[in-house]
Length: 185
Image (tube, rainbow, N blue to C red; front, top):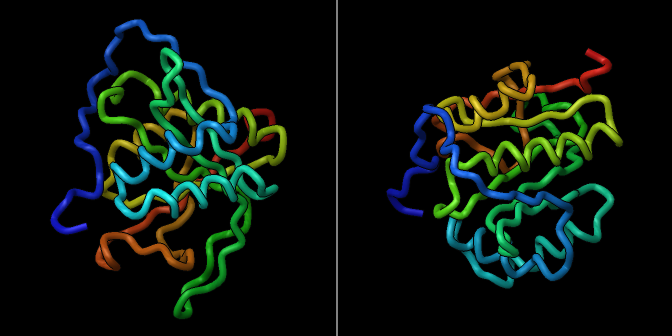
């Protein structure tokens, strides 16, 4: 992906208070195209590969795909995935469980609370299936660190492995976080 920065420009000031109606829901098959378009814009790759990946998520018991809709348009997506990581090069694996994964918000709609709305929707769904949810992030990704801190995620370790995941091409630091269902904290 060349010299492209891996994280969105981040402004920690409060989100814009412009009134918008955000609908968050589980994705349906007709949302796959919009999700694929957002993924290609953000991460590149082939549209059909992304469509296939999202379609597989909709059919899997180990994945839940959510969308945020504004004015009838899908403007963001986020996933929950059940992972069972294995060790990598002798590094202990992250625990098995449900993980928040991959929020992508259309740049035209950033800074309006959409990522927070998607996180809340995914956690509401997760609490019906588990007592704890995990996520991992690059230590330099302030936007996601601040977002998840507001939902009660706490750092667990910086010494973990998830196959296929590296942070800054192996030169960064990953952090593993956990949040427990509010009534079990």
